[in-house]
Image 1 (cartoon, rainbow, N blue to C red):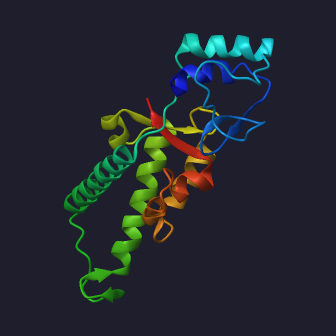
Image 2 (image 1 turned 135 degrees about the vertical axis):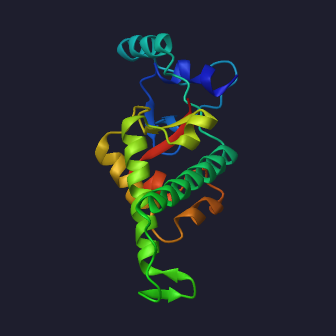
Length: 193
């Protein structure tokens, strides 16, 4: 039985609860459902059952998490877009960085770092608040949702975007988890659209 098939039971059960990492889990076992035929502790709630039927009809029930490869491709494409846009803006405005001002290390200037961070913030805030998707997410057919599976509001997107500029945030994925700090701290996740 697949996760989506199990969710048909879990979404209608009185014992369901939401978990920021796994979505709907059992409040008795504190784990995602793993039964193969039927859940032994299933206790149907008529209101939840009706809500689940509506979600199923709308196609919103099965929100499978994006894979690590999809997340990597998303980031790669987004960084490429950010760099491309920054270079385009610099070319249009003929902005040349002044030599030896705020130089952090050879070839890297503080203002360049700050401009890149600002561009990253603006890029993600615009795309994810309007569509829930960045260019990378469009290409991999994924989207950002909150822990309830809904499109995140502006405040959540702002928090998520600010978390992206935390030093070493990209390395937060290397702990064997499928969520980075920007997901965890903003209570969002990336799912297949």
